[in-house]
Image 1: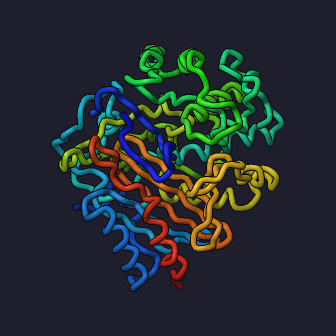
Image 2: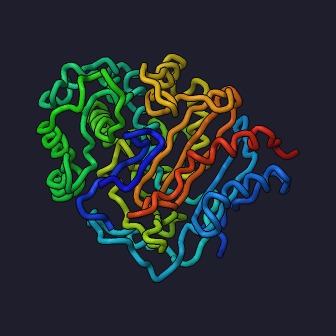
Length: 413
């Protein structure tokens, strides 16, 4: 079963888990960066608060940040990033991994999010995987026109699938993050775990057994498989794991100190925990395996780090002008919500150019939205996940309400 429906017809800009059996207030902990607005409370910021609280109520953890010209206009944390002990988990731990609060020895309690709170990014991670591929093309080490057969010759029709089709979800591959129903990758996941979570080749082996859903290039169909393959190609071409490459070429140069493949390494991290509503009861979500999701959805980050990224894809810097043009060139397939480019949806909102990606993963839903012609960015990170019988709220749906208010905001002094 799929845990959710979405505005994107049969495709979702998220990491989709499919199972035969359902898987089932205080200040921020760091104290180093309070979620206070940069402007005094106004009718505009009160209207923003009303939009967020109208969508998420008073308890779901939400971190919102609105930037213009690289300056924070309004940032605010809502609800709880940690609901405290005891935990009431939903279902069983299908993923079989240690939970992040135990792994990082987090101090627990009823804790509000702040600007330094890291959330699972889910499919917002695809922006960075696409960026890594384009950096390697910029380096002359690969081309988005390379056939997939150059890297994975055993995959069906690999010679007819350029890397560009992976970037733009035009390959026809089934989704590898599926378990218990067709196409079942349970055995591949078990082999991945047995390897110490380092060997992704079982995914390729299993993928080779499934036919394509359509002739390559003939349709758009969102599939996380495209981006796990791209992550593997980054590792193969660069000689480094995807997370290491991203750290060296994107995170460190941009000062994204709170962004990681997986979780922060330090103890006591300011980390949001995921939750969902099942049958009207809020429960803790079992953490999904971010190593398995490296490429399509394995990053954690903060609102401030995402703004550094949004600025970096606005003007040449780590990317050349030609690379940025390629990044945002839409595919020929147009959906009501936009056209997919290289890791981003290209759309418009109220007549303004609107570039974005949302994401959903166990316990989290997110969006990174940028309006380049207005030099305006809106980032929303939440721990409002998809429950067994409740899809939660994708923050994508709040953007039409927030954007006109954000345009009226002014920076202080």
